[in-house]
Image (cartoon, rainbow, N blue to C red; front, side):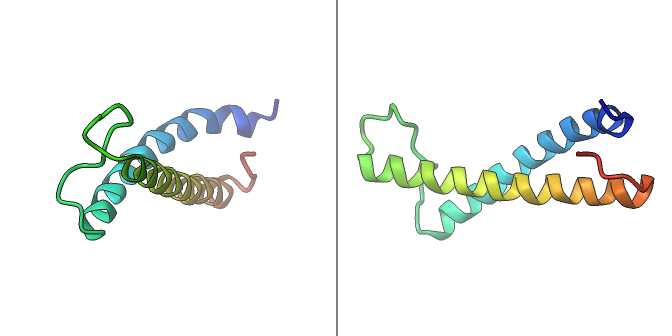
Length: 88
């Protein structure tokens, strides 16, 4: 295993935690902007419809994947600028 991968591992874990927090905040804001006054439904909330549960889950998944990609890619680019090697 390359040294850059080993050194980047803790950085990647920290960036993963940051991306989760950021994505959660972005999702809450988007959910509100779409006109929902309540928080996003849980899959087991019997008062919520299938449509609402699935649309929330799909939107949340897309936002989490997008934010994670942005943060991961940014971390890799920053690592290459600092060290001269790509961490992947």
